[in-house]
Image 1: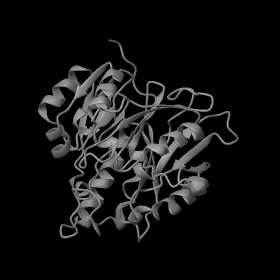
Image 2: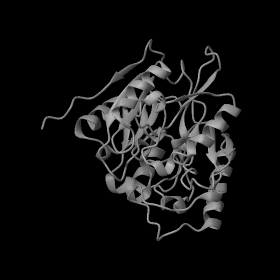
Image 3: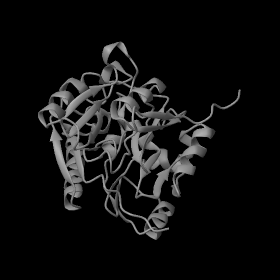
Image 4: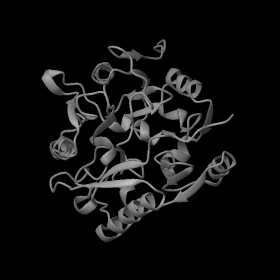
Length: 304
């Protein structure tokens, strides 16, 4: 099947890593007794930035907050979307984090996004209270695919659809280790994506595999031990934290180049390449089809 490269994924926001540390445990990877090496983490982050820029991507850097050690995982700050016919051509739906330890991050993120021309929306506003974390949301073939479960609540999907005016395809994430969709799903081009079905309940896994014409299926062990689904794509190059030989063969057979960038210091906090990067070039009318009033589609509920 002929495929076209993703139009998005060539402009990222990243948060500089000076405040990264493990102060608490909110996912299975975190242990405050095991701290990252600050110098090594900084070098790995700088190498990732340099790699993305070498591949032709633009990287904007957001200052860190001293009280927000997880802010380095910029993917979770919010979902940025462009559309030229809005009053401003950029908007961002800021995350409403599940855990209080991360909620101060969005205060600084709001300031940065507003300073860079974004109108701001916020799922948790007006007493809505629904949690949404942007690591659960990806554009895919005109829809916004969003998982709910460990971090994002199902109610948030309705508000994303309404705020953005798009179709939201909901999936149920049931895996505590792949607590964001970005640990189990990585769009590669307009027909291919890395998928780890074990992150989802059976109906959602079936739904996601049906949405992807040519899935690169990774096992639970591959996803958890290598973070290989937590990757980004610039054109036909997949930037990965690690790549099992079997997965590399599948990617290269599909015409992708694989560039491995070590970011294992950040695995101590439960995130990798995708978690460290937030795409700023997702565009309505190109990557997401506008839908009047928005629409949410959910897989059937499993019996029992």
